[in-house]
Image (cartoon, rainbow, N blue to C red; front, side, top):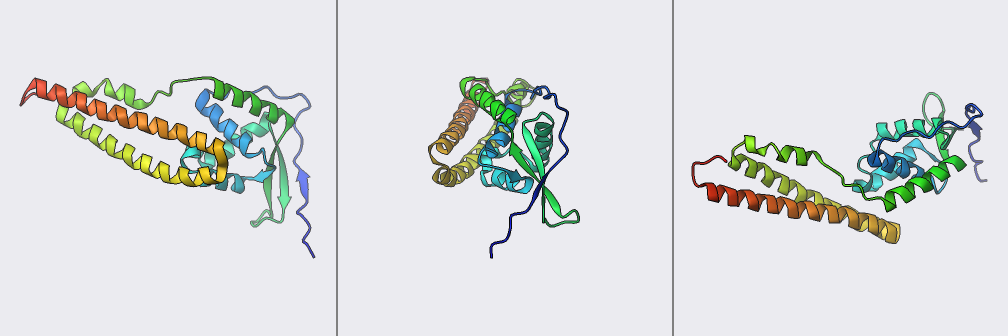
Length: 214
């Protein structure tokens, strides 16, 4: 005989007036919100299951750590984008776990963010741009050594990314492949930039002559 599904009971509802849409804080945070709402498109999930999906997608969802995920789910619930219910029968002293599902308001926010992030181009500035402007304060040999280390890190990252995305594209289809292709393109651009930066500094060192730091 099939076991009956665990009974779901709603958590106390918020005020009748819909809360204001939060200011997410830029494209990086909007992408995380989109990610969570997107993971709920296939139906209700509990927090552990959501985190398991995030981990399974490797580098694509790398910035969404477990504490960040649960904090974001709380914000989404307060904004009316996610509904919370408790599921009885879970392990632990409370004997229940939270189940998250997307609301109609959440669906509208998902569509808004999806359109915004696909159509907009926002250059992603990394800390390295700021750091490069101060490389003149170290000897050229040290700057070249640091860039060589960065180059090695990029190669390691790209190799691991390629391994992860081969599996993700197989399971996720053409749109997962597009996501992976974008990450690879960014890694390739970084690899090309580091190589050019090393060549530029090597030429500067050669022009300066032996015994010159800069």
